[in-house]
Image 1 (cartoon, rainbow, N blue to C red):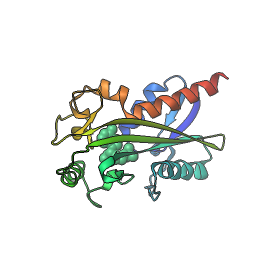
Image 2: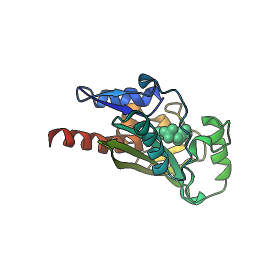
Image 3: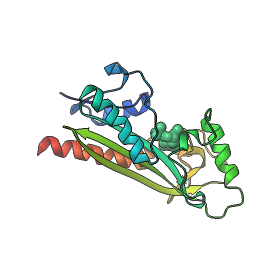
Image 4: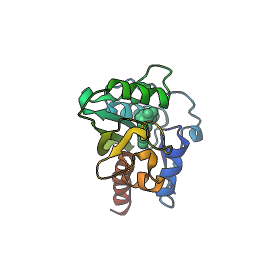
Length: 195
Ligand code: IMP
């Protein structure tokens, strides 16, 4: 079976993609290839950060690989936290402190529209391709739900009554930014294999 590296240390993301690509690709994580360093996310966009991660692995191991980067873009905050979503409340930010900061920053704001965006960069045979997944929604006034992670308790996708944190994981994982980007990636890999 063909091997591909997913440049992530996130076990949940690895499991998810392994299930999707089962029987098609053997998906290796960074620890499987003995890479235990942090890859600094120094880019100014999700695309740059995704690219930095896959380029780092490609240059070192010369192997097909992909990576992803995600951000929450709030319209009334000119797209913030965006590429800084993981560390919005500062260097030692937690999911909870990030949510608190966002709710504080949006206090009194009427336009609560926002979108989650995931960009995947993949390098196959030395050539780089990108895929984006995006879901529009609103930032709620308070936290709702205990599922998911990150900003899930305050993000309600358009057309749904619940936040991501109130949804069954099966539903979130079908409609989410990451699911949409991953779908495009899988379509690309499958088409490549059969063409
Ligand atoms: P990453 O690029 O996937 O590591 O995501 C960066 C940050 O965006 C995370 O630390 C979370 O705060 C947030 N984030 C990413 N994906 C989700 C999601 O599906 N729900 C809620 N927050 C997310």
